[in-house]
Structures are given as C-alpha cells and as structure tokens.
Length: 541
Image (tube, rainbow, N blue to C red; front, side, top):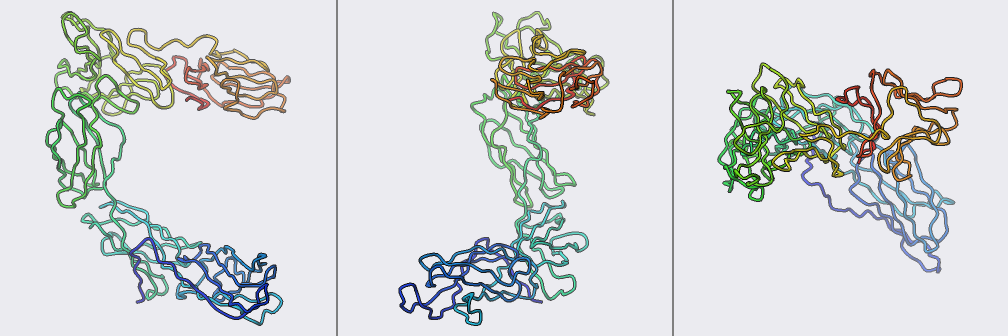
C-alpha cells in the first residue's frame, strides 16, 4: 500500500523551471524561466511566474493531468512591458489520487507548437486537522485531497471504520478516540475502491479545556470549575502548591469530564489569588485555572452562587461588603444563604440580626439553590433548574455586576454604570417617557426614549432605533405606507397604513406587555410584570 506521512505543517518550496532561448525586448538572446510556488494542494490556488519574455506579447499556459480548475486546458496571458508574467491559477481537486503531479507548459499564443518553458508541479500530501478527546467524538478535516470516497480508521480510534466522501479538495469525518488515547494519534484514510492508495497522519490529542466559562462560587473560600477531555475514570491532582488553595484530587467521569473544587484558605484576599494547575495521573494532560476567582464584593455576569446546606438555617457567607469595619460593632456586611428557605439574604452588620434584604422564594422542598446573575437580573433556581425567584430587572447584554456596596445595600450595575436594581428599592423605575404601553401609539416623526437613545417611527415611515441622532437599528419600512406604530393589548407592536393594513409587526404575544427603552440602549418588550424578555432590538451597549 502506498502511504505517505504528513509530519510538518510547513513544507519547503520547490522551484520548478524549464529553459529555452527566446528573444528579449532588446533583441539579445535570453533564457525564459517558468516556476510555480509550492506547496500545492489539490484544489488550491497556486502562483505561476515567468520572465525573460517578449514584452506586451500573448502567451499561453497549458497543463496535462487536468490540474486547472473546471477542466480548463489552458490560460492566455499578456506579458508586461518588461517581459514579466505573474498569475494565480485555481487548481482542481478532480485530479486522480494516483497522480503525484502535473506538467505546466509555456508557449507563444501565435505559435502553440513551440514550447518555450516547462515545469513539473508535484502535489503536496493532504494536510489534516483534528484534536480528538478520549472516548469522545471529534471532527477530522483534511484539505488538498483528491475527490472520492474514502474509509477512515486508526489504531487509536473506536467503532467501525468511517466512510466519508471528499469533495472540492476537502474530506471531513467524525472520529471517536479510545479511552487510552495517546498524546499523538495515528489516523488512516484510503480510497474505498482502492485500499492501496491512501495516507497516514499523526494528529495531536486535544488538551483538556474548561467546558463552562462560569465560576460556581460555593462560598468566599470555595470555587468550582468543570473541564473535559480527560481519560474516563482518570485521577486528576492539583500539581502546584499555591499561597491560597489547598490540595485537590478528583476523578473524571465516564465522559472524561472532571469537576475541580478549589478550597481557598480562609482570609484569602483577591490580590493573593493565583493560578492553580491540575494534571491527569495516567495521561499527563493538564489544565489550569489561570486565576482563582474570589467573589469579594462582586458577582460578575454569568457567575453563580450555590448553597448546599443540610441545616436550612446554617448560614454560609458569600459576598462580603467593601469594608471590614462598616459599623460600630465592627461586623462585616455579608450576603448570606441558608438553603432555599430562607434563601439568600443580607443582615444588618450589628447584633440585631435584622434583615436588610431577603430573596425569599417561599417554602421549597430542597436545600440546594443557585443565585445567578444574567444580563442585568438575578435569578434563584433549584437544583433541577426551576426558577423560584427573579429580580425583575434588565441591564446591558454583557458586563453586568452584582455588588455589595455598603452595610445596607447591594445593587445590580450595568456595563454603563447604571444601577438597575437595588436591595432596598428593587428594579429601578424606567421613566414614563421611555415606555410604550398597551394601546400607546407613535406617528411619523415621534419616538420614546431614554437619554440619547430613541425608538420610534421616523418621518419616512422607518421603524428605527437611534443613538445620539444616528440610526443603529432599522426595519427599512419606508415607502410602504406605514403611518402609525401601535402597542396592542396582546403584546404585539404593529405598523399600519391609513387603511389599517399591517406593514410590519414584532409577532409577539404577551398580554399586558410594554416596550421599554432601557438605559443601556436597548428597545425591548417585557411581560406585564417585567420578569420576562419577550422581544428586543439587540442595541444595548
């Protein structure tokens, strides 16, 4: 079997040249040269250059083996005033897999029987890309391969050989690595009707990566992260001793997923946080938490606080206030949790034990709850994922923070530094001028808005969102007769003509919903109680 191995991503250039005497512009005999750049993959473009030719003269490039695209047999070009020719030609993947290359010939267009120069182009072996994980599927993609039906297999892959078809010079197949996948994985591909023609590649095993970018914070001194691509059942240990994290050992599950629990030493400050590395005992594969997340005073968007307290009234401290001495009693203000009942709450930083705020979801038959910060809102969910409390606020699409600010207050702050919810006032009220309520209507040239952001109908009949007078979103409804934009009782916004024909609609249904232009710059329809986003323009910053 003819097999070739691709071991390097960069291949050395091969200069291909043919020589023949030909008169130059000055009348002296020169030697025309022809060369093509390499590597040349099947189906890929390549550049051909020639020099020493007659200026401003027509020449023709021809080839054998059908290496030019679309079956083109020749290309006609005219040289420059200095007798130079340079052109890029699109190759074709329709060349037989048994051919190693092809010849390029340069002839004078007016005298096609005379070859002035020739070069032989050798095909580069196909180049694969894949990063398989143990006991998990991965995509193998090969470029520069001849079109046809192939069979893909390998000694480190599991399951039956994979049948795949290459087209336009590209082969793609799904392969599954074995549980004991080595650092370098051998993969074979051969023609389905001719096993003697094929290739062997060595591709690197994928490194473990974090499968979820969120930090799960179980207390100020415990952080959870999840990573995949370890060997199923493999033991993973913390390899570096840090200033703040104690030793951790975990075992990957049947899918190669490992959950790391980083126990920080009590009293660790954010400035002391540093990297924690984990390494698989059998595979040697490693993954690193670049910086241990200490919540401190802030919960960032996408982060969660999780409580798992056997005794519902056993308090766990989560976010801590900015000052260790915020009251005469010298007690620090904390966000506490005590199971799902009483849930997450804050107490006065004195001996009164009085609530400052409480997200009391009612009596829930579970002790595990998760407080998560989304795009400007907080939710409390049970372990099964059911939402049992929401802050009912709205912020920017990204960059929101939940901050314990002082002894009496915590708030959700957007990326534009706007407080949209506080523990003492709840959702920050949107100005009436920034809302379109049920049965509210906007005529041409009218809008609602907050600050420099406006939503409405311009004088041409376009439904638009503008920021500082500049259109940032439009439905391009001008010229269709729309004269009135109305918020219906069923939660739909419609643009209609003078004859009541509908030109455009949000196609939403949420009785009692209203449209708000938020301080972040988004125009959005929220449900009647403001807890659910129904529709929005996506223009928040």
